[in-house]
Image (cartoon, rainbow, N blue to C red; front, side, top):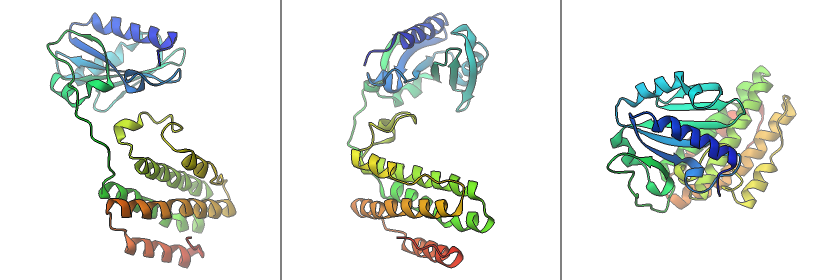
Amino acid sequence: MPLTAEQSALLAAIEQTLWNDPRIDGLWLSGSLGQGGGDGYSDVDVIARVGDPPASRIGREYAERAGEIVPVVLVNLLFGDRVLNVVTRTWERFDILFVEPPELQMYDAARLTQIFNRGASGPPMQVRFAYQPSPETILKIVNEFLRVLGLFPVAVGRGEWLLAQAGMELLRRLTIDLMLEENRLSTADRGGALHLNTLLTTEQRQALEGLPAVTADRDSAFAGNRAVAALFLPRARRLAAEVGAAWPDAFEAATRDQLKLRIGFSLP
């Protein structure tokens, strides 16, 4: 999808500023737009190769002068001072990742669009393999789901219904993570956090949308936890069996016992 006029203007402003800095010897559009995807709501992500390291020093400098690119209202410096995360006055968003030359070799040229390159080489074309969920990844998701679910009696016992709402959202997020693994989507193929419709199947979306909203009261919390467990556990068991992950029987049994004993809550 072509960039919008606003995205193109923002990218041009970033390009002009970084081109005028001789320490930046390459610039690539990344993220969904760099792969030729995205839409009018996508932020502008770029990778800037620093010919004069360290990249963190350049990142800190640009955090101070981000307003030279466009008028800005928020500047964050993330990931070891290497990522400049910016919101403009018109609420456009852009990120600049500053990398040193050897680090660029970790990126896939097929996922980037070159803006300029004053160096001798660019990112390589990486060999891509079909993603297969690992047993370790699935077990990590399952164990975290059981751990969060096992803390539900704490919220109930203390009457912490706001805490119960937060726990339900964690369980919902873990269910989404499980579904993305079901769909064999690697981390690189998932993109940013602000879209899911293109990553989930119709059946998955309908199942998630059918989960009850949890309000700050006992009945709602019980209904929400029961519904998300009924959705997550059978899917997780199937996927664990598919990838050869040993199901954590002892942890599940302990969690079921804890829920039943403490609050009379039986898992499906």
